[in-house]
Image 1 (tube, one colour):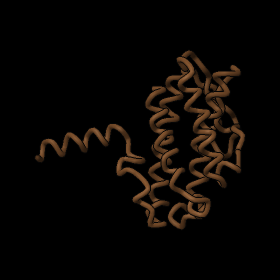
Image 2 (cartoon, helix red, strand yellow; image 1 turned 180 degrees about the horizontal axis):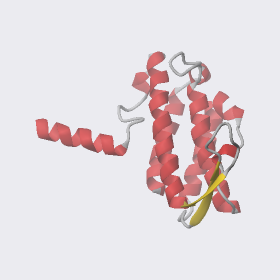
Image 3 (spheres, one colour; image 1 turned 180 degrees about the vertical axis):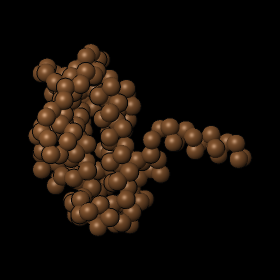
Image 4 (tube, helix red, strand yellow; image 1 turned 90 degrees about the vertical axis):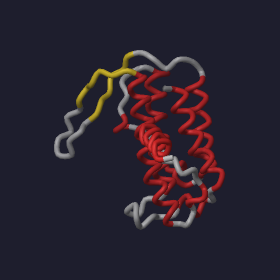
Length: 171
């Protein structure tokens, strides 16, 4: 799971090399005013939250992550964090049990504690990233920047495999 996460983060890093600050911060009408930078910040904070739980111990709580506004303003800062996360993912096996803490209701603040594993949480971070990449793709299209990304950016691996298989059958 670590390699897949690294590959996914690398695809975001490649995008960041192509975006200037204005494009990165552009408030998308299609994304309720959110920017590409805000979506990338959100993705990176989930990985950072998980790495903190792994290195420092304790439960992972994505709700109580520290929001780093600089990450949504500056693509270079986001690239630095991606490099740190990729290095963490490559530093050894990210495995073992962990508890997920989360409050899923809006009206009630009762947090739930759910048994999980670091591998499961990495899978969640990857799926979460792909979801936000699909939203980022919308923001890129709105700005006329779809040429900045691969067509598979923001597409689940299972969908990519299905499309490839469908092309083979129709050929």
